[in-house]
Image (tube, rainbow, N blue to C red):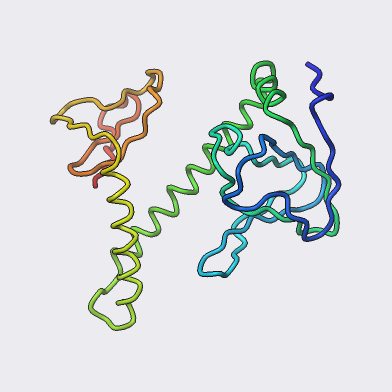
Length: 205
């Protein structure tokens, strides 16, 4: 497969912005040929470096896949950088005919999901250790409550499914139905494989 006609090389200089957070996707995905880039998010008017990309890394695929706005601001950290840009047509061609590219893409998405799950676990641990009765923790606790309210509002804006005891929500090995689930109340057991006496992982609200 020849996608050379779809690839554009972009030469960048230090501090050059590739795209900005909350910017509408331009339908482009990027490959780092050489150089180093930083991914930034802004909170309370302070910009934080949250990730980096270097040679052979790619980025921008999530906005292209989902048609959403850009999640982060991306800028060049090194003195110079060279990027390869592909448009949506070339992206679909790669997915159709290049299994190695699809595998690399899946690995990237799974890694990001794992990182997100790890951050959530650490936040749960911090919440469990938090003493809400101390003066030092009152403001963080307030922020946590406000964030919880936002999450609750979101959860209650989506369709609600009531499941009975013992009911299977999803089954290992079956095709996905395109749905993601949030636990509003109750507990669910997560089982993997058919191993006897397997340790059961429980998730809840």
